[in-house]
Length: 300
Image (cartoon, rainbow, N blue to C red):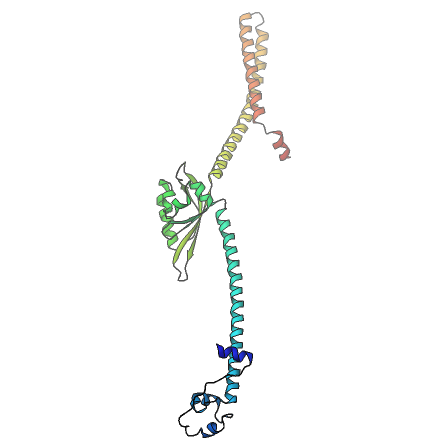
């Protein structure tokens, strides 16, 4: 290191004196004239015992080579520094991207799970913990099948076997049983993850709760049935009103013929009142079953 610093400052290298006992053949001229060297530099270095003072040519060559080596070290150091900075920037970008995807995973509204190839849970997002009513520490390592309703576990086992064989699962519906509470229907979407060798290493599960969808469908079916009943009742009320009008006309004619029979007229009056009550009820039913004003405006 001292030699490197001395060469960097341009100082002369001091080579310790080593006096050879007897010069070798072919180097008598170098010994006679220590300021010159007839051999090339590698040969002189290899036989430096015959050059005890160190000739100026060798010293310059040593200094030049040390200076070149030092410059190469500086260039290599600068390249390493730049590479380290680039690696640090790439690592920070990867960490930011990982945090972004982790937040998307954690705060997704649907249930997201990551399991191994056997269906054991490795990760679960917040929606999964809330919907399954479990804690993050207790759910890790548990088989996913324990959260499947008893009547759907056979179907889940068949689904898991299909996934291991490389099939895709999209839109399969199973009943999920949380730790506490009633089971709920969910639609499953599963993506398989493989390693570099093509082996199945993980399964990514998306469970979409469709309980609200089923309730909406039930209400829609009920509304359609009520609408059909309303249409039928409206038709029935219309036909019944015609029949009641005919019966009312007949009762009025009968009352004219029974003018001198008070008892019979009393019965006819009671029948007419009953017909009036039926007519009013049919009108109320017909008005209830008729479409609302907002529906009529939309129809127009």
